[in-house]
Amino acid sequence: MMAESSRPEKQSGFEGSIAGLPLTDVIQLKGHNRFTGAISVEYRQRQGMIFFRDGEIIHAEQEGVVGEQALYEILRWPGGRFAVQPKVTTTGRSIQQSIAYLLLEAHRIIDEENAGLRPKGEGAGAAQRRMSVIAERLLQIAGVGYAVLFKKDGLPVDDEGAEAKALAEKGSELSRLGNRLGDLLGLGGVKSAAVQAKGEQQLLFEAKNHYISIAVNKETSLAQVESDIRATFGSRK
Image (cartoon, rainbow, N blue to C red; front, side, top):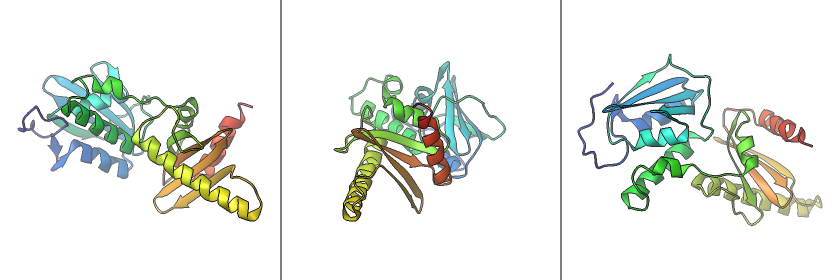
């Protein structure tokens, strides 16, 4: 546990460190290491906890606030102390987003506050993205890193986040390639597709006038996630 940062408090973002690394770097490192446990954070009289399971942030709490809102508030603190606690765990889950999305969103909030586009202290509550019901349900399936429902013109539905736009763009390109191949082979338009590349896995499904693009965690079985998705949504019929 390190001493409180000596940097000016007017700077947004957490500046405390452990073993020479800032908090955000430690969070990313724990994600890569598939860490299970918690990081406790202190800033003056305020305390917070960030919980991990198999390298994913699953829960955060800070003075009665939980979930993404609590995590963003912790990451806004300008300094403090934090410590890794591998023996502290939780059975609850209030966060479904990937670490990459969460850190990107936290930086966006801080940048908007610094630019005067968002009142101080309102970032966390306002930052929680809306997303389609189907995407929310997909995030409940083990191995799904993120999901977005998008129109056939490539525009995401009910999600304006950077991760949603990037995933929709990848899905749109995959659908175009699939449709061209289907035309060449006389098979018609693409109904579903699976892509497995180095460090990246993706699923694509057609849904009436839309597509669903799904990022699958790289260490997860793509076939198993696809099977779980079909079983989950097949049960609705």
